[in-house]
Length: 211
Image (cartoon, rainbow, N blue to C red; front, side, top):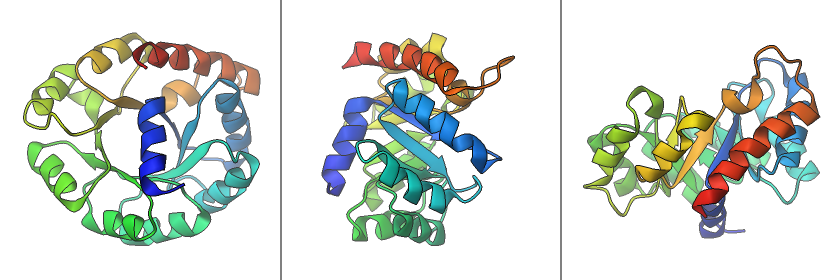
């Protein structure tokens, strides 16, 4: 798939599952559960152990799932992720070098930005989607306000998004959401593939209301 096709799938699915772990051994349970729960787009963050190896391994294991790299804050991480087979890159910050490297390899970037200046800079550099981050600290009203001058820009809200407020974000103009700990950390429960899948289905069902 080329850059445009991958970006289109991300926009169609409207949901990126963010996998940030301290122990690489937990990733297989999480990924298997998320995929069983209907998640089609996964982001393995660069500050997870052996993230590049995990991307490469799971690209082979799940050829029908989009697997990208997250927390790609600079060119070196972008290169490492791309060599591992990442199909898209997600950054927490606005960094022209990440976009340049990704686009040289025909890979889309979900670029972190918060202020109007950062959003404008990211778009000027060619970001495919804007990751509004940390969205939860500012709320849906902030997204709605920033969408006014940037009404043609595709925004994913990321950071502090919960099942109960997904509707507010989508109605404020989000094109999709990035979800992390709400999918991968469930208080009081030992995570199994079945528990992760059951939890993921609730979020997938919610986001499908906006197809």
